Image (tube, rainbow over all chains, first blue to last red; front, side, top):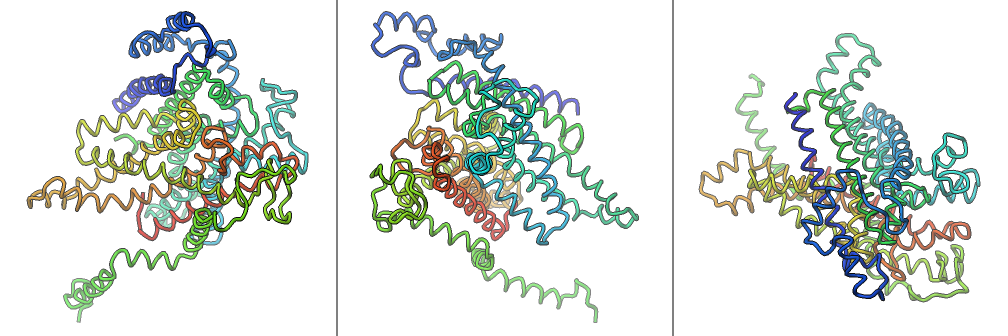
Length: 316
Length: 301
């Protein structure tokens, strides 16, 4: 058990290093001079040369990577070219906003998915199972950016009951727990919840069906347990898999919120990525991708650790 | 007369029945199952209709998908000559939807096919050779797994810039790791089965074993897994165009059309939802078709 834990935790180190290599390499995937974003095309050659030295672009790639990694390790992600502010302080504003969306979407998706999946698995093969399976497959097939647009059309354009864009009144980008901000949260969270809803429904259905087909369930019934007592056993057995899937889904929503954030103009990491891409703001782009990927790596680690704590079969 | 299962006469009849079933052949059985599966058949037909009407869009439609007409801007559905209305430039929506399907379908299928080739090869190599090479390939894949798929797609095509080619490159890179993983795990399972050992003992060479014994057993599950990715890929590809990263205007493509029509939801909301509806229907039918194929081929992943 302990060796498994230590090995699992240590394995994060090479993964993180790989992630930094990939994120750093992304910049050099970009065609053309990395300076082209900062320097106007008619700038004098000496100035370009000077800037190249100042940014360190004149050195060989491995050295550039090492210096960049050194700064990242001390928590310095550089300065955003387009906004002129520290990347870390931009992220400090954006990450909580995305977290609210992702956590809300996951919780809603989990609640609905666990319910639909549980019912479908319990009533295997009946019409209610088919209905829940249909809802699940719709959830994973719907382009969520389009669903968001449809929700905006229904609830903002036609019915005019919920705000269409933004996080709060007057373009607020700081989260406050009041009714105005909560109203802005409704549509994006529903939009984000459909994919986890579909995936968790499928997982829970399969898990519950598999557990119910095992012999120990018959034994529990034979022992004289009531239906809801047997159900408790099913829930405890289905929990590890379901929680693991939920954790991964939270990571997907965190990293993949860009589409939904674009639809709702939500001031989170997705909007940050969007503007970094189109303003060719390389430090901001690198910093945001790096932080989101790190979130995902540590979320995966957490899922594995929690899962191995509640389900010893996981440790091999 | 005993009727125990060990009774040789009864055993003989059982064998005969089994042989009779087997003689139908695997693919005939699969086809029979699909023909009986109403949902899969309907999805297949819808998909066929979508594919054919986009491929033969030249012959079905009479208007130019690029020709703007300011007088017909954002006409509602049902306008004479514009059965599905006009878009923000007054172009015929029906024509653009049909032409747009070409790119959307191509960008949804091509990356999966490319990733199936590359990832399949990597997974087969890693699974069959094992050892250090397996370690190397799978650890590199783990790094790609550290990125949620949307983030990876957006990051790569964001770095490469807009364009169809760049979008296909980035989506291919997104799908290589999962396909490699599935291929590797299936190959590893099969490699350790006794009949591979038997084939080796009887003198079969490595390539013969891979071709005859491994590949024939790996292809089915990996193919089914890849078909389930097409639906994701269509959504992602259109999503990239929706962000302004995939297709560039004035090219018709469902994701890009959704993006450009987004501004007009207050004028003509029904028309603005049409491209997304097409993405939804296509992705749903691909998903259901993949599920149907999987159960018909009796594959558990």
